Length: 105
Image 1: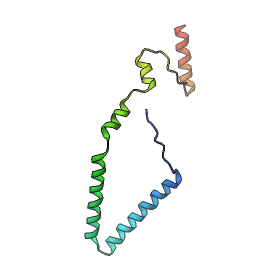
Image 2: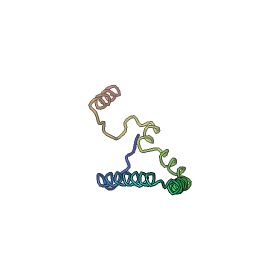
Image 3: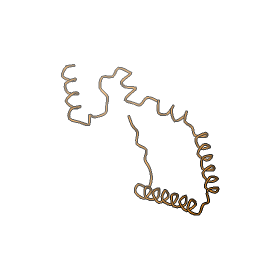
Image 4: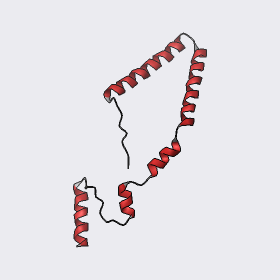
């Protein structure tokens, strides 16, 4: 199952990210135009070091543990419960559920 992550900002945040990307591209292009490759190398090296520090201190193990915890539906399925309490979302799923009920009766 995929879980959606709620983000704040919506369209406003997307627009801000796009503006940031275009500004960074313009800045890099300007450095290349004025032949400031030495400064560009230094800035890119510092950016890579920052990225590596973020990855080094990220709590990937804790995130994996949180994602691997069984949900309520998983626990119900492993406990031998025939029917999960969530409602079917499609007509076909409803028909399958009705057939199971008829077969059980």
